[in-house]
Image (tube, rainbow, N blue to C red; front, side, top):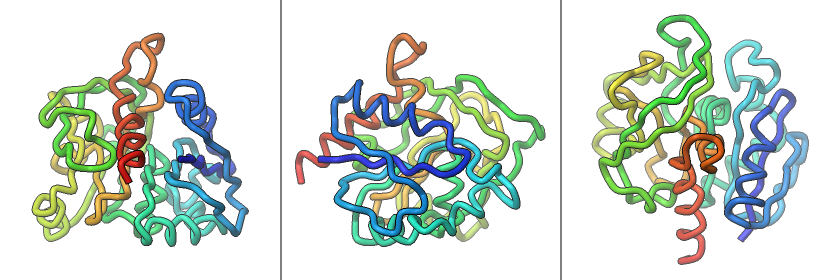
Amino acid sequence: MKFGVVVFPGSNCDSDCYHVISDVIKQPVEYIWHKNKKLGNYDCLIVPGGFSYGDYLRCGAIARFSPIMKEVIDFANSGGLVIGICNGFQILLEAGLLPGAMLRNKNLHFICRFVKLKVENTNTPFTSKYDRGQIVRIPIAHNEGNYFIDDEGLKELQKNDQIIFRYHGENPNGALDNIAGIVNKKHNVLGMMPHPERSSEKELGSEDGLPIFKSIVAWLGEK
């Protein structure tokens, strides 16, 4: 199996994701430059955090039009695994691979700290190594993490078990229904604001993000 980490101008968590895949879970991984027009052979794509294109206009609004995104969209629509983290989540929303939108944090400040999450659905390629209802500790670092969707869209997310992570005990950014992470209807595309790559080694203060990557490996190994 092989992972690909998409790199945009302004990405700053790409090397963290690469490190976790290469050095922690010991899987093949390559960087994918945003101007590439061909994707190559990958089993899972990671759209990492950062400030793609300086977050001008809206977060992810410009990155959504990078040449590689057509390939990412086609890959996801064909069933390939895609995980968007923080700015990557914002890009997937702008690209239409996930429903909803991101607003400014309710307090209008950048927030960077550990938060608690509740695992809501373990029946996905990204969460099988968790227990349903498990409380995990994973950091956030964002200015626009206030997830929003209209009433009808929220009912769809709830009906289809698309809400994967909710903030637990504290909603740091005002996100609707405490939503911290969602999947698409096919459950092969995950977007989450917290950073699992920053909580995958005990030296960083938490390994609670590591099961996401281990879940992906297990799912791909069963295919």
